[in-house]
Amino acid sequence: MGMNTLTVTDNRTGKLYEIPITEGAIPAPDLRKIKTGPEDFGLMCYDPAFMNTASCRSRITYIDGDKGILRYRGYPIEQLAERRSFLEVASLLIFGELPSQEQHDAWSEQVMLHTMVHENIKKFMEGFRYDAHPMGMFLSTIGALSTFYPDAKQIGDIESRHLQMLRLIGKVPTIAAYAYRHSQGLPYVAPDNGLPYTANFLSMMFRMAEPAYRPHPDLVRALDVLFILHADHEQNCSTSAMRGIGSSHVDPYSALAGAASALYGPLHGGANEAVLAMLNEIGTVANVPAFVKKVKAGEGRLMGFGHRVYKSYDPRARILKQMSDAVFAVQGRNPLIHIALELERIALEDDYFVSRKLYPNVDFYSGLIYQAMKFPVAMFPVLFAIPRTVGWLAQWEEMLMDPEQKIARPRQIYIGSGARDVPARPARRAEAGVLAR
Image (cartoon, rainbow, N blue to C red):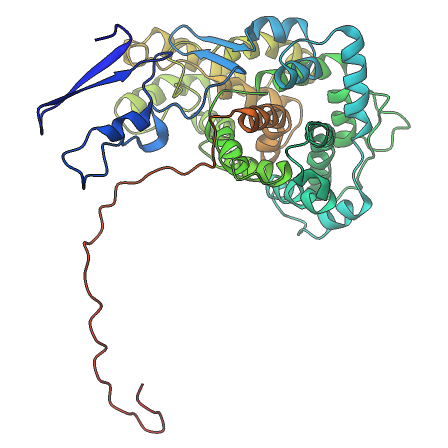
C-alpha cells in the first residue's frame, strides 16, 4: 500500500479499497468503487453546505483560518493593503502577477475608459421604484448588461473575456452610484476619469453642485483598502455561485448577477449591517457586560465574531481596526466605536468566547467605517459587490480554463417515497350544469 493513500475497509462486505491522497484530498469519484453489489450506485459523500468538500483547485486566494492568514496569489493581505492600490490588486487577482508601472498605467486607463454606461441603462434604472433597494437595482442592472453586449457569449475567446472584465470592473462603481442616487431622488453624476478609481466612485456618489468634486485623500485611501480586503475570499457562497452558474458557459454578466444575488443575502453581504444593529441595541458602553452575559446564556448572538474559516483573529479585521482612526479623524468618531471596542475587549478576555474561537471578523469594523463615511446601510452589500466583482471574474476565468471542471451538478441522497402507482381517479358525480370529468 502506498504512503499517499487512504485504505478503507467496507465492513458491509469486508472488502478493502485503496484511494489516492493528493494535496490533502481524496477524489470523490473513487468512492463510487465502494459497493455492496453490482446494483449498488456506489458510495457518496454527504456534505451539506460543503463544510469539507473541495470543488476546485485554485491559484487565486489562500486562507489558513487557524493562523489567521489571507494571501492573494501568495502575497499577504497586510502588505497589499499597505503598499498597493485596489486596481493593482485587481490586476494581480486576474492576471496572476502584480503589474509593472507601465502595465498598471495601461490597465487603469483601460478600466476607466469603461466607466460610462449606455444611456438606455440609465433609463432602465429609472424604471425602478423610488424606494427600491440599491442592491436589487445593482444586481438587476448587471444582469441586463448581457443584453447590451451579445459578444460576451464568446467565453472561449480570451480577448472577448478580458473585454467583458474591463467593462464590468469599470461599470460596477457607476451602476452602484446610480442605484444610490436613484434611491435618494438625486440626478446621476457622470464618471470623472480624471480621478482614480475609488475617488471617482465617491464623486459619483456624493457630488452635488461643486464644479469639481475632490474627496479627502484619507477617505479615498480607506475605501481603496476596504476594496482590497473584500476583493476575494476563496470559495464563499457568492463565489461558488459565480463558478456554478459560469460552469453552464453563460455570459459573465448573467453569472455575476447570480453571484451578486447570493451576496444580497443577510448571512453573506448583510453581516456588517447586523453588527451595527447589535451595537445600536447595546446602546452604551455600560450595557456591554449585560449584553455579553445574555449571549453566554444563549439569549442573543455576538455579531461580527467568528467565521466559518477563521479560527483566530481575521487579518482583515486587524487592518480595518487600525485604519478606522484615519477615517474618524476626517469624519468624526462614530459613537458606536466605543461600544465595539469594549465588546471586543471583554470578548477577547473571556474564555467562553476564546475557547470557541470567536474572534472579530471583517464585518465587525467595516460597517462602522462605511457609516462614518456617510454610506447608508442599504448600500453596504453594494459596496461589497464592487470589489468582489474582481474576485468573481478571476474565479470565473480560472474555472473556464480548468480542464477538470464540468457543468456543476451535485448529487443528492433521495429520502422520499419509494416507487408507487398512481391510483385511478375516483368517479365524480355530475353537478348541476357541469359535466363530470
